Length: 342
Image 1 (cartoon, rainbow, N blue to C red):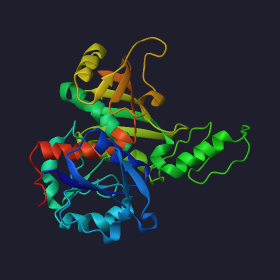
Image 2 (image 1 turned 45 degrees about the vertical axis):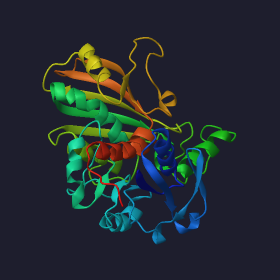
Image 3 (image 1 turned 180 degrees about the horizontal axis):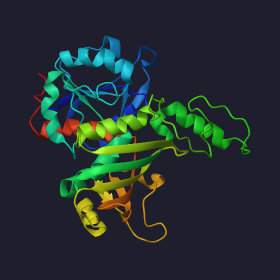
Image 4 (image 1 turned 180 degrees about the vertical axis):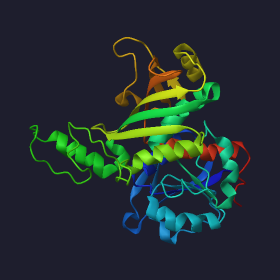
């Protein structure tokens, strides 16, 4: 007997990816239910070779459901996740709603699986921000070896992180007859995104950082080590899928680039592609559709003691969202933490 899984937000970018990943990884589910808002009732979504019709979240009975994979935004999660968790169903939430709640584990299975032990307080587990996930996957094995003191990261994040409408905006701006400097319609971003980079993701905070940058700081401390100092600059770039990051790390102990490469090659969920020649690295286009996080351009930073710089790339819809969510459920099953609903 397998598990019963509900996917909330099944018509969105991440919800559809969740259904694909469940099927691709042959998740042990006897039943998968697609849920969405009332306006999407009856909309068809794919689950492997099957087609599911979306049902209404508000009228669905979660009794007997083992996992709820939630990808419907913070507002929906704030209202519904506690209600769903109270039925005994485990909620794995992809929004930012519960990430900073001390009673909710914030989990990347390759990094801090032991944090899952605290899930029962609310029956909710939070999925970290997409840009945080790929970074901590690469940082964890290096932190174990040489202990990280400080991280400086600049992200180059694809428009899919802002949803389908943002992807449509990039496409409509790009396919039109573009003349540099001409007026274009920008509704999902503060400036035109086609042929441009925007150094703002989410709203500005009082200290001048954006909320996306604050998320990376706060989440890295919660997931990896509260003593790590981190500063981030998050940039939206005209790429459809895939986030990349230029990461500079200062360690307490010496670690050479060759040693870092070997450590990362042996670490789960990471592929090292680091040839010092033209094209000897991974870009966003190449990571799209891949489960792994790719690390390239590992090199010493001689401006600080024990410094390394590297380039990290990952599919933000997969490892940054859908895949990590399902890996959390898989980890709970592997650790014997979930009893199948009767």
